[in-house]
Amino acid sequence: MTLREQVRKFILQNFILEKPEDLIDDESMLNKGIMDSTGVLELVAFLESTFEITVEDDELSRDNLDSIDKIVSYLEGKLVLAAKPRRAEPRTAFQV
Image (cartoon, rainbow, N blue to C red; front, side, top):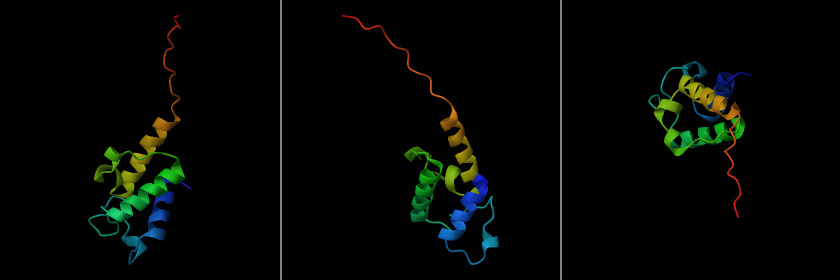
């Protein structure tokens, strides 16, 4: 299942929509009343537990979480960063 399919499935199962076809990937879910601030917190909990990421406070924005397209783009970026091996900090010689 793709990221998009997982996000879409979560939204359809957890938020009230009159018709599933009303969920359009590039439309604002906040403006359409599909999701409110509590819904954003539910979405964040889902993203963090499902994809093993941490959504930082400064990432809680419409730019990242307002539409399926934006959520998928945000997730792709987070997952790329998480997959990069971290460079070890240079060690300093122990001096007595």
